[in-house]
Length: 283
Picture (cartoon, rainbow, N blue to C red):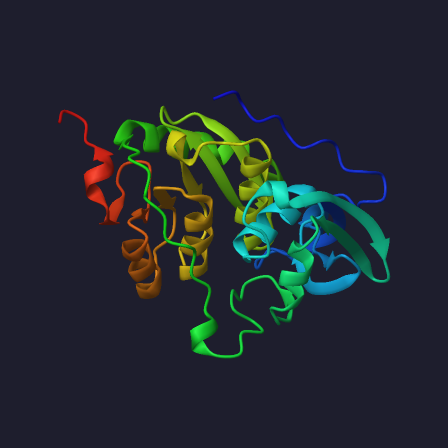
């Protein structure tokens, strides 16, 4: 699988993903503060608009927004494939940005029949859902027969830290990465919202026709059920999370036949389900 090229440079209208602000550093045992400057992650309201109809306002990092449009549209169930999106473009809006998504004929009509309002979400995954029956569930599909070695997972985790350029600068954003079966990273996306980071990554993968059987996902955040559902929409067989999962996330991983590894560290990780896909060293 050829490597995924980074998204094109942000258009001039987009704000930088990080800004430097003046600060004062105060030591408890010193009389005078020390002046300093610190990078902050930029959080920008982005209004997703399908046709001419606003759908959601998401608080995001203003980078890789075309990828975000594709990934969000897929994992929200608005489209079933990248081919159902004609284009996605960014324009300035009042108090933020507008992400204009042009759908193929027929798909917009189907989308408008589904009511949902999710304003301002960065952490919540189900804002605007009317009832429990409306909780998102990805379409069942045959899980890929992907097998991943522990050596590959370790390599991906080791490579992920240096690849998080925005987080290295700000210490305030999440990352989602796609790794080949040898553990080398193909694509990394960052955002102030963990869901947004994964949507951006999924968007990048579906735009380039990545085969879900040829790699695995790594996320730096808590593994909640929404993250599992997004991974299932992509068709990923293996999900590795640095933080712990929730009980519902585990239930959904089992439902989708997904391998879930969490609390992943440099020397150990915990397998919650799907251990048969893992290749142990020496096995």
